[in-house]
Image (cartoon, rainbow, N blue to C red):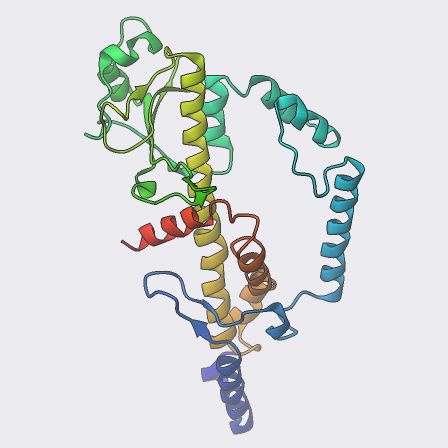
Length: 319
């Protein structure tokens, strides 16, 4: 029932008091006006029961943790600090998780067409754009990419046909890397040019790892030394994953959902049709985000190796 449909004074008063209670129970925390606001809760023990994990959900999470830990212990990986030396070490670890796709990737991960495939089919597919004009920060010439295009065509002609695409990591520019063991970790703000060849495969044809071209910031090509070209792709893909984690996963999924979740909990009485429609989608949002802030982004968390980079990307969004 909508508020304007309510007639009984007792029910109107009850609705008013419920909203007052909700607004005192669910409060905003504003760390920066240009970033999404969050809930004020610091620990899951502070959460009201209705948005806390249910007993069955908690048991399910603990069961999965125990199962994963048992598997790691069985494989000798629990607490291990050994480094993987090659792809075969990873294969041994992931033997029970093999799929047709994972097997193909493990055999073809160095190939350019798989690199292009992953841009469209991996975790961050929305950052590639059709390119009709190169940005001034990416001075790729016809002579550079001619060997990778069809005979008789040019870069300009392929742009006009709509066959040239660009990934530009401008958002990463100027973000300092985390200091580890006295050294700064590398963070790229690259540009990658792609070509849709006659086989309809998306392949990279030029990579620049930083925004401003210079002698110390060359354009890498598929005709370079195999190791140079492979490293250029790895650095670019690593930066792509950092951007995805900070912007499209944390910001645009978890944190944005929390804004709508807190607003729903604060602004609608439980009897409201919109509350009933929305609340199933926000059931565990606050619980998950609180745990994530501690276990992933907190000191010693799983993402602590590049959390400063993630924070830098979020700050770049404010500009």
